[in-house]
Amino acid sequence: MNPLPLSRIRCRNTLSRAKPLFDFLVPALVHPTTRRYVSTTSSPSATSTEAPPSPSQEDSSPKRRRPLSKEQRDFLDSALRVNQAGELAATLIYTAQTPPLLRTHPHLRSLMQHMHSQEATHFTLFSRLLSHHRIRPTALYPVWTVAASVLGWGTAMLGREAAMACTEAVETEIGGHYNGQVRVLVKWMREMEERGEEVGEEVRELVGVLKKVRDEELEHLDHAVGEDAREAKGWPVLNAVIRGGCRGAIWVSERV
Image 1: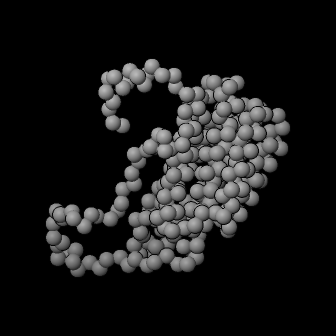
Image 2: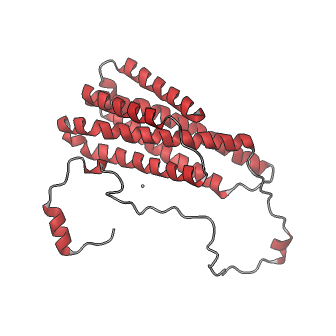
Image 3: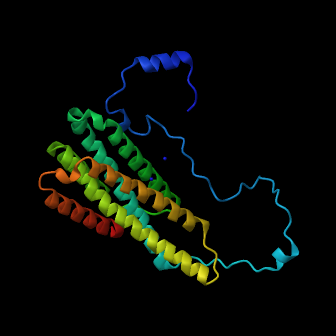
């Protein structure tokens, strides 16, 4: 990475309690999601209602499906690994920024909740993709966990502008990173079609996922700029340091 009806008595009891200030930071186990990812494989028990193929359809030869090369598989392994690590870091940055920011700027609650929710959804999505394709996560999980939490808390303590400058720098790098992945996959698809090969549905779906996640990350960048990210003291240095750190983290996570 966008409920069952309660009884009237339950609703009254829920509304009568004060809403925790940082309730959206509570782990997903407390607020379970019902998001499902639809498989492209038909159920074996499903009854086919399709009409039998016409003679012309039987005569036409189907497109070939060639397995991905080792180089392509290695690219996807590293891409999904670093994507999951990046979304973990983004989620932890917002988790650490939120309490100090909202104490002084309570009007940012809805924005922080919105961005945190999207990053948590992205992290869950890439975690599922890693599990589905049996790809190991980065070995530097503990390092990125601490680094992201410190970066989030530290920039929030410097003030609203510095916290937003952090978001702008991170999302600039992440947006460009996802753009690069989309370009590679689209190039693969075009080459497959030119060779008369069938493009796998999983590849098409992954391109759609990456585009959606990229657009949401760039939306966060726009929010940050709108909240005076570039008014932060020492913005050029802060921006350059954070972006450099992101590029280094991406490079390492792709390989380790």
